[in-house]
Length: 296
Image 1 (spheres, rainbow, N blue to C red):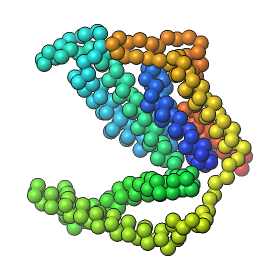
Image 2 (image 1 turned 90 degrees about the vertical axis):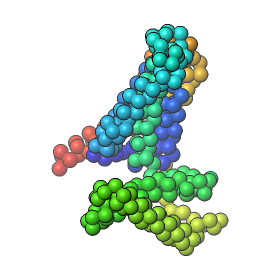
Image 3 (image 1 turned 45 degrees about the vertical axis):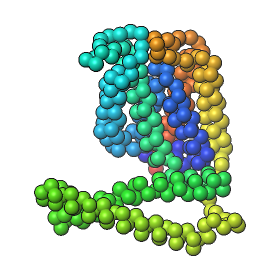
Image 4 (image 1 turned 90 degrees about the horizontal axis):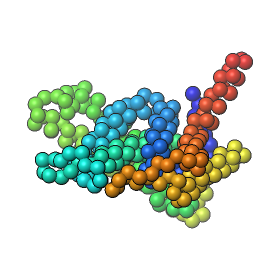
């Protein structure tokens, strides 16, 4: 399966994720939260497959349950009191619902960021921000590159230590601690050596020089312009709806909002279409690819 969305211009990719992640964090309307979570899960499953399933089951689902369970214990706001804790603090319906909404919001943002990390590679960051904020773009690109590289190197080191019986799962507890410290020491040494090599490589390539040129493989095409226009139109439509109060929803002191009318329905549709735009492009290209292959 081809990921046609990732092959679009970096400004298109970044603009899309900037809109959907920002809106996912600030729109607390239950319909918007569910739309964001469902669409983020669909995109993550398409892009990452089994990794997205693992992320959802191992991290996201327990996090949703934990936040939903813990929030009523610490948040006692709300007009509808259901019961009292042993400490005398009330457990309110509003705090329970707000905890569930907050958990769904955080899960959606995490899933969107998993897709973001797949699409927005380090070279795209450097391309977008290299001339504007070169130092920050370099730090971000190196951080995005370092995390998977560190994980891969950690696995290699642990496998090597395991072959000679020095893994963190071998031996007694003191021996396991000693082996863990050894592996951490190896990883720290590798990280410092890698940093020195990267610095030498950048210096030899003229990083920081004012007249230094940069090669780019990206070109802004007509389909990029069309998609970018659609992202901005749909994104600002949702923002204007939120500012005007169509998507206003409050949980305290009592649940208030969620009025369904023509404007809110149009806002929900715009929000859903915005978040599903990459899937529309990917599915369209997949269908075209299968049709071309069938003709061979």
